[in-house]
Image 1 (spheres, helix red, strand yellow):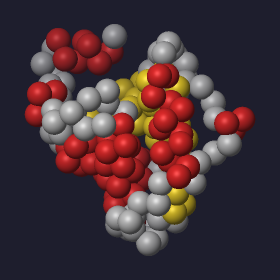
Image 2 (cartoon, helix red, strand yellow; image 1 turned 45 degrees about the vertical axis):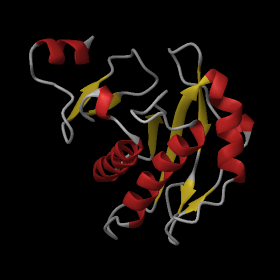
Image 3 (cartoon, one colour; image 1 turned 90 degrees about the vertical axis):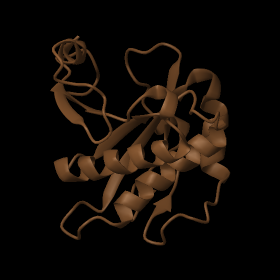
Image 4 (cartoon, one colour; image 1 turned 180 degrees about the vertical axis):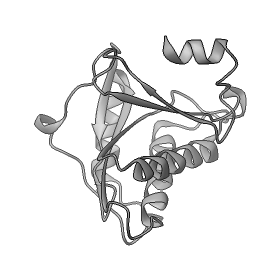
Length: 169
């Protein structure tokens, strides 16, 4: 509701680089929600997903939050598959973490929110991938299924924790 009101009032438009930090007022399992603009859906491609993840991590580090949940878009403008979408999200996040100032936290727990039907494949991709473009200062590991907490609210969604260390934990 709060974000919808901001959009209706013309104070939030979804433009690239636009960011709004809003209270969730108990509607989510988290106290604050960071909304980042990415531009029109029709132009949101795999490179845009990577840029979005990087911007989200930079802002999370600036806010000194220990955990960041990022939604995995169901599609991109060019129709990137789950593997490419996941890789782009992780690369963007890892690049931002690797370039953080030394005064920022060295660990960030990244939770990827994926559709329930994509969750088993997403977990397998994180567990088995050895990304060659991952910065040397960042390591990737998954949490055990028992360690994951399910997100509240959105039926049909699950989470694939991708703690990156060095780190995006």
